Image (cartoon, rainbow, N blue to C red):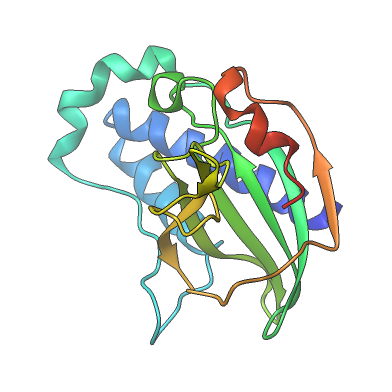
Length: 185
């Protein structure tokens, strides 16, 4: 899992640099980082869409955000046996803008070793209904079917079942996410 985590940490640092270049309106740096970031994703064909960073005039309304950017924390990593990719790592992260997730979980990146090397094969967003805990009022969350995550982009993989290993790193600062952080998934 360490190799996959290190790969994701490198990608998240590039995403932060990409966002900084976007907000600073540095088009040359942005275009170079865009291509590099996109190369870290496994481009899917039939069952999903590849992740693509936003590019264009939306930058102008986000200039205030530049001073709030931070490195993206990885809160937890889980290893699963995937039917197509073998062992994959699923990493729950925070956001580069702390106002986006208020110190809680924000995205889950699933990373696999492919013939081209490690690649991000899918990205899930946190479930706002249960805050990634999988439960609402003691029952499985209806918004995410009890997973705590909602598909965002990439390969739509089957339910992965129980993890073979779970590692907890920096806990989220928002206490509402601690239940999800302590789950073994």
